[in-house]
Image 1 (spheres, rainbow, N blue to C red):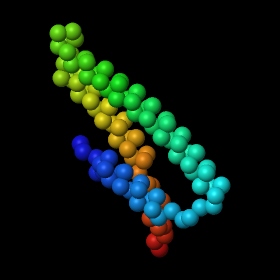
Image 2 (image 1 turned 90 degrees about the vertical axis):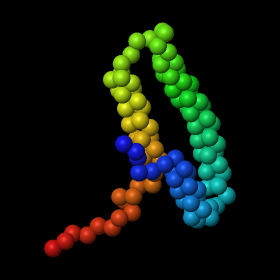
Image 3 (image 1 turned 30 degrees about the vertical axis):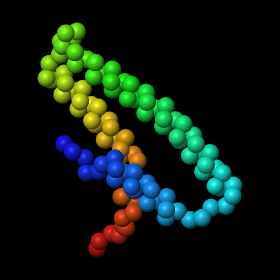
Image 4 (image 1 turned 120 degrees about the vertical axis):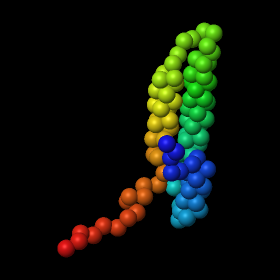
Length: 105
């Protein structure tokens, strides 16, 4: 099942949101830069760790060293795909909160 969004779309939406933000005061700008620096630092470490873990999972495909079934593969890829889709959704702007609300008589 393919998600209804892509990484490129998520990134494009983030940049579009950044362009629409109002001008900030000096202290707010510094705070945002500090938050941005922390985000970049943590993202770099965590993504590298995730890539390393994924590569290690890939090593399990070596049939000379391991015995696995198609069902094993489906379970591994299913849980990885579900988790990645969940993370990608967390980076999406909340579309539900943008919708209006009114009760119908």
